[in-house]
Amino acid sequence: MTTQQIKFPQLVQDYFLRRLVQQRGASNRTVESYRDTFRLLFGFVEQRTGRPASALHLADLDAPLVLDFLEHLENDRGNTARTRNARLAAIHSFMRYVALRDPASLPITARVLAIPAKRFDRPVLGYLTREQVAAILAAPNRATWSGHRDAVLFTTAYNTGARVSELTGLKVRDVLLDRETAVHLHGKGRKQRAIPLWKNTATELRGWLNRISPAPDAAVFPNRAGAPLTRSGVQDRLNRAVAAAEQHCPSLHGQHISPHTLRHSTAMHLLQSGTDLAVIALWLGHSNPAVTHQYLDPLFDGDAPEPETALSWNQVSAFGSPWTVSSLVDRQLILPGSADRRNGYGIDTTSVHR
Image (cartoon, rainbow, N blue to C red; front, side):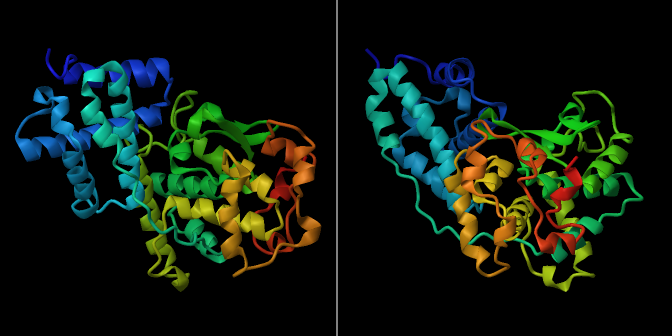
């Protein structure tokens, strides 16, 4: 009897097609993330051993090699500990599946599964002031096709607090601009939420949709080829906007700003306006309001919330579960703070009240 009774290529294929897709019903983003992990792993193994993925055996992926791969990610590719842990989680998931499919491989899988996630410092969340956000939103050249797209993209990102994956996955059918103005976002874990749009955001989107394909499945923010913008594409366009905005807002100089920075800025501006953490958790699509507590630490360096504009947990829980941001807005429970009325790019929810 051989140590490995099931061929390694068969294990990989069954893991992706049977385990992830059929049994677990994993989302496309999860499958893509795990696929990228194995693509990097197989490339590393081929460079190390000279054998392509089709010629590998499970024994080739023992703990020492996996540890070398994780070190390669951090030292050679410049990945953070968080990314390293995400890659390790994908490998762990595969090894748990192999342990069930091929018990003879337990010695190998047990050693790999014993590799721990790496601990890392969690920095205080960075966010932008309203003036900095306004400078970035005004930076793209709206006279050009790409500049118009970028301006609408950043405005939508700030309005909704959406993740970059939610923005790049936004379809024309997800944008509601008739009686109600909102966007349907498809978040992590296949969770969906509807976020109301401010008047200026709805106006921007109306004008932009006239310049792209009206097909329901068409991407709202495409590249020149008509395909959805990639994560790196969004970052590149944001870098260009920040560089242009620095001329009018010097405080942006030297800051590392990512699409997630806009998401944090939305959350902080909502919090500074007195919105309850439970509503912010709903707005951002957090699975648990406790995750949103990370925004409390930097709050005390900025404006304190105004008690008369705050939305309490009891007010939110009174509407039962699941909640929708739109229902809270309809009942005028998300209220603007005084700072919002002074800034057209503040968290101004009065524009969505009907």
